[in-house]
Length: 118
Image 1 (cartoon, helix red, strand yellow):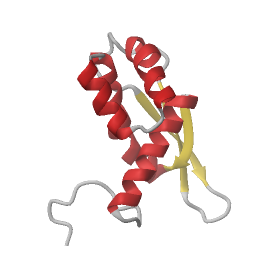
Image 2 (image 1 turned 60 degrees about the vertical axis):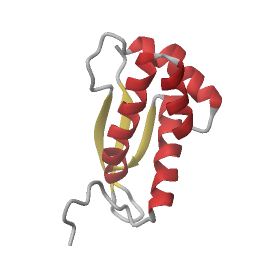
Image 3 (image 1 turned 90 degrees about the vertical axis):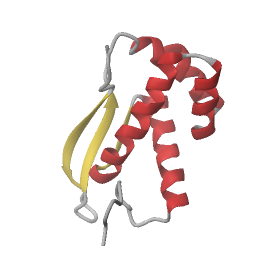
Image 4 (image 1 turned 180 degrees about the horizontal axis):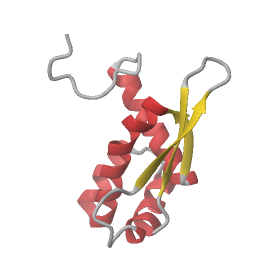
């Protein structure tokens, strides 16, 4: 039974899922968009938006909380210098998920998650 079990399991252990979300968020902040399965994109959205909200704060404690989740210092720097100020006036909803259809190999639903421009 799934009583009070939040989020998708994604057929992974909790540590594997945590590593997957960290790597997807790193790629999203590096390239401004990522093509992945629809379930992974929907699971990534709240994770990434929380990090952007911390980057909007911009203080030292927020930076340490972000570095706890993202292991690439260059991406953390980009998040705080470019993306945080870019979304400073926006009250949330920093990402968009666009459904792209089905993957040829296994028929999985594919989606693109991207950061909004302004």
